[in-house]
Length: 605
Image 1: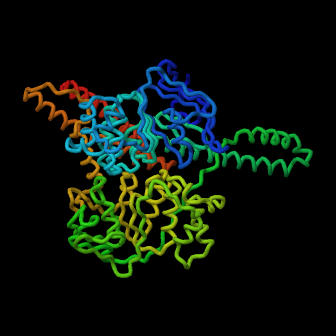
Image 2 (image 1 turned 180 degrees about the vertical axis):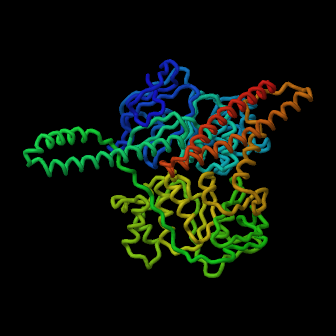
Image 3 (image 1 turned 90 degrees about the vertical axis):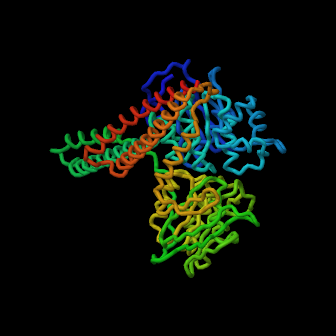
């Protein structure tokens, strides 16, 4: 079995790995739905310890590939070979709870593990002892995801498959999951649009595109840089070949009728025939979402002012005492755990909920466009185009509505589709398209990137950066929030307040808290000596500092890769030197992290 290292072509070879060491092998796998091919001729392998990030556009077949790997679906043709030692676990999309089943009861039933093992894993994902007896069906969406993660990890798998794990997962839980994955030594396959999450947790990349799987031994950012660099090189090569071709054609056209030049003309014609074979194949570019938000006149002053604002439902206050002043033209990210009150705050200032205390006001004449969290599914028979017409400003013409549909990747053939058959990504794009058809100078967005592929998320972040109106949004997508936010508001412990630091500082603080939660493989602690416990605390502090150092190095690494992506022909050697230095520092720091983690684990044994 040949496994490609650094190959963007599914047919290629480099590193030889013994078949006996492979956990799973895909050979010529194909899958189609209603006659439409989704996967064709997929060849890939998973070896012990590999950490694979799977990327691709919405509808490219990523989730189908994950379901075939887990056995939830069967391939139409080809072979899936699983090693007898394979212990596979995957994050279920939906957890089926028995009536009145407790949180701990669900974990015991779903995994077959002992009560104390289930309790320990639940605690590592932030569940308190008092919650163990709580009916699982009463958990919020985010905490349900935490519970499913705990169930998936309790089986001690050697291959863990996570399909869009960050959807509906708040940032603190993402940090807890990352802290666990750092110590997880089995193979890992993550399907996600969240590049930041993949870059931090995976060192191999599969891209699903046009039914094929392209394998790369490196992070997502490294893969994207290499792919774009190769495409740029191929385009330049083809331009040079085309230039030579035109020159030869002109020579032949001009001189083949002249006897004195006939021999040369024949020679040039042979060169032309050879030149045709030198063109490099370049697949047509995939369509991109084009987002243009409404034009707004920029003005100074306050966009939103709140005075001791309390938000909640009925007579239950979820979060209170918001005294905020958000400037016009700002883009404010609302931060906090799921269930803290972020969406409740957005619904209140968008006018969908009445405040339970205090007051808020937008500036006079502000027109608000509100994007709520999208439901899991729609049952409406209304068509795509009818929905957009209904949502659009009545002054807009039909062709403008049609253009918006096309800009958001709805071709004419999809205009009559009922909303109930749309995928999550299509529904997200449809509701964003509707926002662009209104004259809104305020946008209130609740998880706008959920179900969006990375390219569309990037397009939205770019559009928001150019938008002159004001934006208030909730998102757990780190890359999107880092690019889009100019102001930060934190909802925590029932209070709403401005966050005084930067977004990077907020994320680093969450990572430190996750490390303090002891996500390392735990054993019953037998040490009673005070000196040993103090040494353990010191090791944990060192581990947290190394985590912060690694996060900073990976951010710098990503920034250098983005520089190369934006400036592929930059002749300056310094960025390349720094990239090599950062790679070396990351490798050395990871080794230091592993050594400390093993020392800490040994001290707890």
